[in-house]
Length: 444
Image (cartoon, rainbow, N blue to C red; front, top):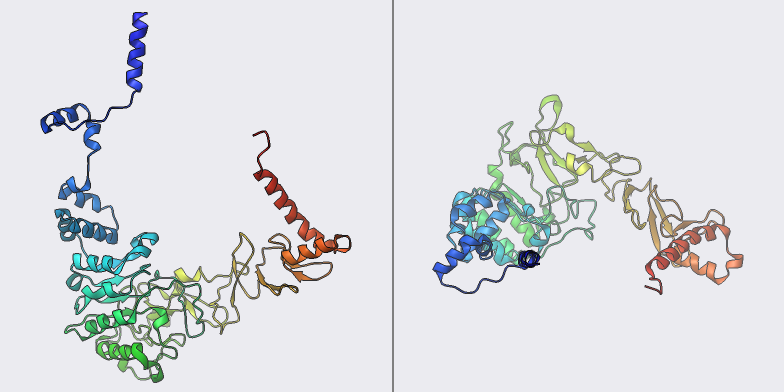
């Protein structure tokens, strides 16, 4: 009996949670930590870590996240922030590395602190504010008068996201828009252009800022943005020299811009490597050395994106780079369409629940309810009655939405069309089964 009691007592002691360690003198605490390492682990703080550990751990973070960590440590007066800045290379900064939810929350103070922390005015060569929709541009002030910056992308989009407007398509309802203010951004841009030894080669403005009209139309230079663009072109035109023919691109006689380019977009410059080429210069097989992608609105040289990787729109023959062409391919006929208003192959998205496929106008079907006048688009894969009860009845040939068809059946089901009954019936049965499954039995 005594042996069993001792075993029971040991079992109860093993199952008891460890007691909280009270406030003890340092000497006693060190002795306790030797016996119980978990006590020390509970009190670990990032501010207690040495600089070498923080720098080694930050190597596993993307560059932008590393810069944000350096900013946070610097604000807490930890020497690890200075060590992180000294150990990193800050020539390029793209907020695409940051999680989308975090990028949306970043403020102008966060961006200004980050740029000041890494000494962006002398170190940063490329800045892309991908996803930073919450900033107004005030945070770009540390870049003023910078002579190191070569590329500034203010579009707030990823590299191959669909542009919000082009010469043909100006619809911008489904495009990510930011809060950038012209009053805050333009003074910084002017200081970059006016700086002695300006190195700016590529400037991507927000698409909604771009003036309407052709790229070489003098009427598009009116307004605040137009005046700055004219100033920017005059400042950088003499520095854009073709890598192939070694001529100044802006001085080429009768320059042939891509017809789909819009005013305010960068010309003669590859977005990836910032190399300059004339649009008339060709390489092996008469392939152009610089090609314009209609999908993302950027120029790419033949070294970064070989011409053979581009694809043509089936209707208007505009070019799409390798990344953009998969976004513009019709899921019905597998053909490539630009989707602009000047092209026959306009994009139509299926409105069926759970589908949302995008097809060209030839493959999809546009339906309008004869009763409530609602409009509905259906792709080639969605059959009548399978999605939301929309469609044309094969018996009475009426195009109606589910609600209107159901109302007609309820009003006089004895004289209702059999085709309409077959469309409404399965959906009513599915809804009844789901309702019964959601109800708990009375005995539970």
